[in-house]
Image (cartoon, rainbow, N blue to C red; front, side, top):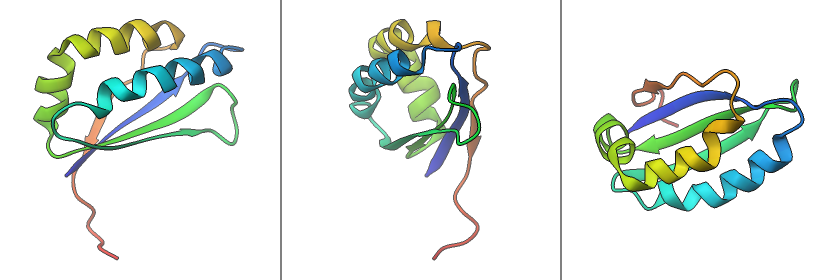
Length: 99
């Protein structure tokens, strides 16, 4: 399993609309092959910043699957205008600790 990580900086004052758009966008990613879970956590310091964590079975499920799908175009249409700057996506491997 890998985790997709991004910091989402939303344009000032648009957090409420962003959260509504994310609720509409969530099913688009959740229906993708290889998807495992999604978390969107608001920052405690900045009301316009969020942490996005999506678990995938492997990187290719996101990069070559979702990112190449028609659903990704819908995701982009719903969410990308909120970001300033556009987020950088990073991938992380399995945990080195297993509780």
